[in-house]
Length: 183
Image: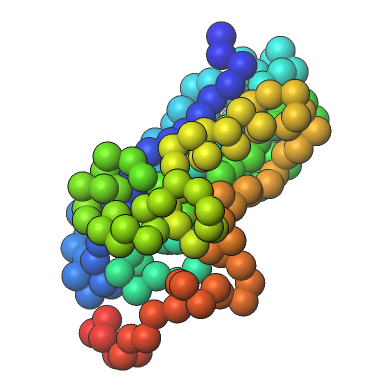
């Protein structure tokens, strides 16, 4: 039986609130919230019985901030981040840790295929925090939660974004939009 479960799933589907049909809502919630919950339901009882295990869910920058172009995705990612905290509370007596990672833009094939990697200044791999993360940078945070360094950490979300989710909202994330543009 597995001791580590990593729930990493597809990225955002662009669209404003008024653009989303019912089926698109269901699809986004199924892939970003329901699928991880079903995997957890299948794997975690064994971890609890053995009193050993780590669950790592992938959220997103968009689960922490309001994003005009990815409303439903942001809502689904916020749900998995909160589910992480609730599940951590439930599994704490069984010594199973549950944490999440909330990456910002990461240079995956899917990310690059959407054209989001078109700004060469943000596609550098070092020398600045105002850039897109590498896959390795995100993967190293999984290793923290899955390994000995994360053995006493549960219910947490680690933002892997070079500070893009700083509070208050970082300047690089501010978007000037018409407040009625979603209509």
